[in-house]
View 1 (cartoon, rainbow, N blue to C red):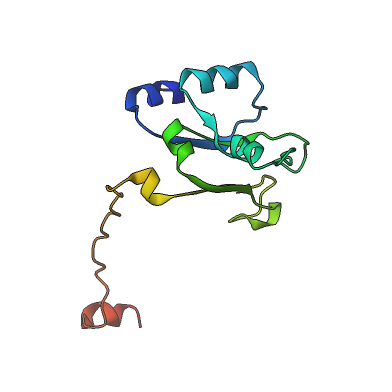
View 2: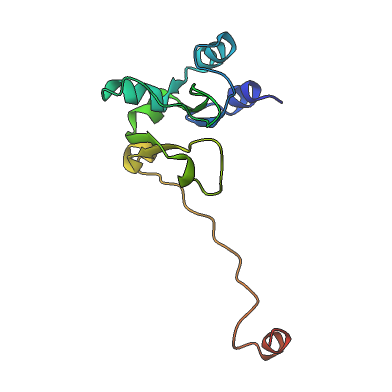
Length: 135
């Protein structure tokens, strides 16, 4: 199943982020965005805030090829957007991290996702048998 099929099947509100290896003006990317009613979350917000030129998103080029796209509701929930420097990522990369900060209440409403509970760990200082194995 490709991404378009998955989006059509799941429906609802969603965010698609990634290294698309093409500029947003490319026909295939435009068709994808239009067919799923997606908005460029970073580029559109940057234009509205007066940022004329987006910096390149990968070191070896001059173009933006990394994006965060979302539905209209997701877009309306944006608090701020930006691009990290190349050295600010979790691990070294030749791409900038795309950063989108959302108003949680606007995005999720009253039904925030509840994080899953983790199963309890079997290791405890009160369990002599396990403690002796790790001394």
